[in-house]
Length: 307
Image (tube, rainbow, N blue to C red):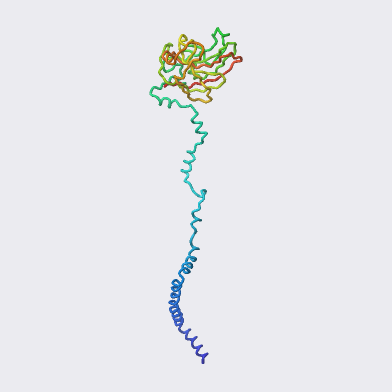
């Protein structure tokens, strides 16, 4: 009978499946309040344990801050425009030193520095005349009759004081001159070029502060830039400055106040008097002892400016 009742119960479940589902829901609804009550009791009886349990469950989902803030410099992406700018503005100390030591400047800078600047001569003009009306000439020691002369010094420039001789040469060659100094027993060998302020040569008071020469100079013979005056004033002891060797083309400026005579000979002439009674300028290669064989130097002048 029991078997029949059990069997009959099974048949009843097969005939009515919803009855079984209802029984399961009934059990769940009965147990749910008990589970909630147990959790509530845990929070009240041991709150620290409940917090620890919750924290442990959540920690695995949190990425440690240190692993995100420890960023290497190599991982930072710099925009290319910024990177280019920073590299372009980096200047080495050697570059700065080289820049500060140079005295080479361009003619436009000189002209802009003073409203009184004058381009006295520029090789691209193709002329032997200077802006003030005078002209270029050349000279050497070949006519010297004292001090064991004559000399044998030469240059590429035709030896002449005539503008119609030096002019065509300057128009063709610019002022590109090879000098050969010495080659004889003459004690003070020299050769050079120069220009008069006026044509014909006459006094031309000068008021400039600097005379600037754009040139290059190579070789072993010293050269000097000279104020040209009547020899009765200075006894051939010109007011002068050294024209230093300069491997590349560039300007060097010579202050009027820095021109000076050699001591111990000639006639004394002040810079003020020399400027007031100037006839022109000369650039001369010169030795103060006889040189044999001859020595050489190479001078190229592109322009001369006063300001």
